[in-house]
Length: 188
Image (cartoon, rainbow, N blue to C red):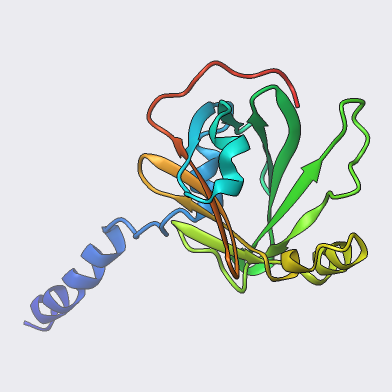
């Protein structure tokens, strides 16, 4: 009888040990890495007249380089291939977004390497990047005080990727279609 009771009590433990463990939900970095190598076309979704130059151009993001801790995503605006978003995984699941701007000869633009870090872990769908101290110093040095309040964001839904910039009196957003990759553009 004791053996029977032991068998009844230990059966749930044995079943629990055999049950598959729940896998953690992929974070934003992992989800975006699934698009590595793909180029995706986008469109301006903000309605600010200052976005006209972007709205009339073909917009393509290319998830070009993906590593365990960093990915590089060139953002092509028409024939202009000077912009690359650099997303870096930080300790404790945070993310960093930097903007790498280059001249045609490959040299860095004066306004480059600006961005910020998430405040804590990034969620699976959205990450916000307030301007960091290095970026604020750059904006101050280049006399662009409005940019000191910049907050960039990336949002990854099932069928779209949105890059946005927000600050007081300014909203800019581009949404890319994840369902139909396009031809890979030239290198940035």
